[in-house]
Length: 244
Image (tube, rainbow, N blue to C red; front, side, top):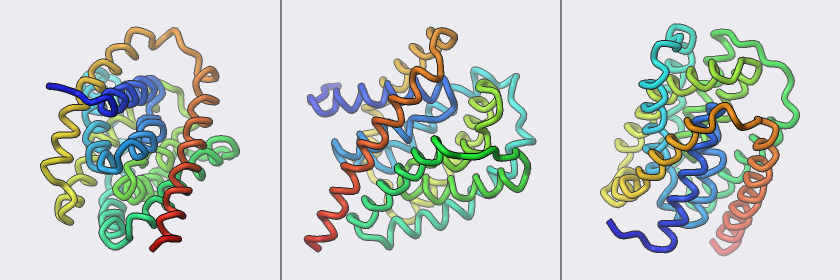
């Protein structure tokens, strides 16, 4: 399987996002999706969702004995209507509007990561987080922040494992609703297959260095890259709106 220069760059981005999410429970959509979108909008949302699902499967299989499925069920149930709304939004909105939405979601995620107050983990907050994760994740592939905010005060390993369980069930719902809307085609599937080596490499590297990295050393970089990506995507969307 041959790769162009841009596809090799995309592979590196996927690997970096997978490493981050394997470690903290989220970050693939926040870090990789906007950068992939800038390389080629075709990477978002379907290929990004498929790659995220692949990682969730690896994590759940690896950590299956530590999972508490019952606690995360309200979030999974609430993601269903969120996915439906997100799929409708993706079909109804023009490309430039989705770019603006994508950029705004990223900026909101960065701001919330910096200034959020304590959120109690209970069925109500899990349901709210699950719904908005489905809505935003289906439309933009960045569905991590709403549900991750609910888990912000839970220890890293528990949050990572339960978020993986949530995305393992929730992400196929997003893909299914997108398929019903005609958004899943052969080209998006081929893009996903070509990026799978990045998932496997990223997961392997993350497992090797899981106990050697400090959260405070990666969070500023993640937020900086996400902010810069959001600004570039917003500029692209506003330019498209201006020319429409």
